[in-house]
Image (cartoon, rainbow, N blue to C red):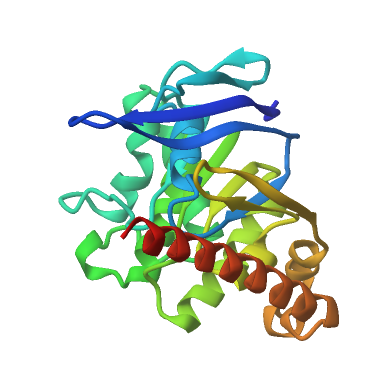
Length: 268
């Protein structure tokens, strides 16, 4: 379980005053169970649009998403989403937030309580189950969001800039947690990020997307996610290949941004 096929996806947004924006064009990709994919690219390359299509929040203009051989036609519990802001329920405590999905699915209370206890330990919040969300730091709230997603036992976890709002130190700790959860759960993960370093650290596969229309520009297979499971992430960043890939991808995206700016100047 967990195999995902993105088959010739295109997405066009029609504008109210006429005309249209081609957000994605003929994007195809296959992910096997347990793969960790990071996606980055310049603003406007359609990476979040693609994630929303996989989540079932948007229906593509062309193409289809297949999960475990079945066509995705809308949101479903087999796909969990973690947003940049946790989207947590402020009026519930940590434990109730994590148990929300199983509670709505009418899972046995004892089973759910056991699962919540286990997840609290996994994400490092064992002593915070009774705390209210507003009592937690941003990093702790994202830990709750991860635990809530895992409580539904999805085949695929979708992450839209989940660490983007965190300070540098907390972000690095959370990157380590994401890698830990990936290895321990065997989940298929797609992570959207604007950070080249983060994409390199967290993606055993990495896609660089090009804009207008959004499409896959280049794909990398990388060793850094596996290294980061057992090593300090700061040591991984010191790897020679890491530095070379970072500069290569930064230059690639910078050139795309320059091209976009050139187009805007031509229009003006």
